[in-house]
Image (cartoon, rainbow, N blue to C red):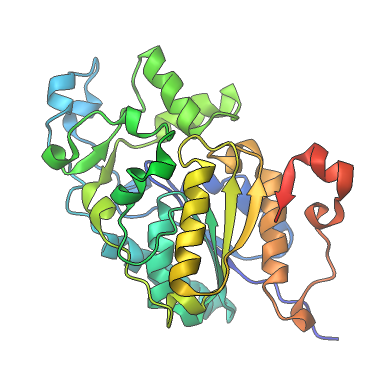
Length: 316
């Protein structure tokens, strides 16, 4: 009997976040025998260089609104190269194609990676991610009519052209601002997790990343199977925006993105980590040729009817 294949995962975080967002998901996948790796993108996590004004409290808003970002020179290509390097290492270690999972703004990097090394990817999974059609920028998507209810733009505190970054203040003591931030990113996340994770967000995302047009082609990106997990209660990237991106990319690339719906806010890795892990396990197995699939059935696969409704986990 041929042993079941357990494809490895590589995880990419979204904007203003870091690799720590996967802290509850990765162990669940490893428990089922999957190899999984995360990384901090350039300008995030261990690579953060905040402006000096951000470190001084109380915050001097006038200075914070005009201080040039130390992340200004970080490019989308640098982020793409970092993930390509990690995937190549994982492929060398495991001898298998990788499942690339990207959250939110990390979708930009996932698409660029799929265009660069499609031969190393089993599938790309966008978790309420920026999956954009060719030529479109993240800034254009943010301004698109399908993003009209998005809560993130109200958090911006500086002119991006002046500071060369898209800047927020996760450390703000203002209750109204903190409420808007939580509503956008962590609406269904517990108080305990929010208290721990919000201060770990960074303030600057490089403007250049938002202005880089997506450069994907049917011949390369288009040959990598796509999965998209729509978060139905997301206040950062509304369902309407997520659905627009799916249809736009499918129209440009041909072929259909396989869409799944998760009844969560923007951050299911905190609010519903077990359900997210179960869905990823299902995607992993269903992406393999039938002869290589495991006999393991996730609770996600096993649930049906009223049970599925109670779990509020939906697949289309």
